[in-house]
Image 1 (tube, rainbow, N blue to C red):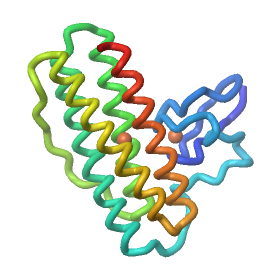
Image 2 (cartoon, protein in one colour):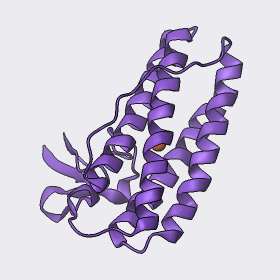
Image 3 (cartoon, rainbow, N blue to C red):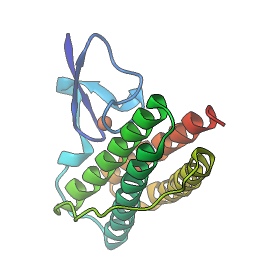
Length: 172
Ligand SMILES: [Fe+2]
Ligand SMILES: [Fe+2]
């Protein structure tokens, strides 16, 4: 077994070979490194620009909202599979929120419940809208970032949200 570290969320994966995506934040394989080679963006110290700070706060709110909405959707799911899939999506979005708090050096804000639709189809559509909006925003935030580690983080998150869209589309 080997210790792999995700360069995005900084969490360790213990296993035989790299996972295709980080089990915690969903970052693709290229961001997962063998322990000693890892340089997680969440441990980088240093000043961040005003624009980056604003973009990270916007991301934090978006991720917290997605987390709460996905928990609502999980509770209304009509199968065990969909329930677990949304529970996992919720945890991935919470990990994204955690990454933002670490780079910003702030505590996680209180997370209140959120509403979602009553039908599975409605909620799949809601998910696609959320993920599409997030993916587009993170592509822009990646371009705008002047800090290398923030650019890496938004590039990774953009890909994760695109992967979520692919996942949901398989159910439509
Ligand atoms: Fe990760
Ligand atoms: Fe996310």
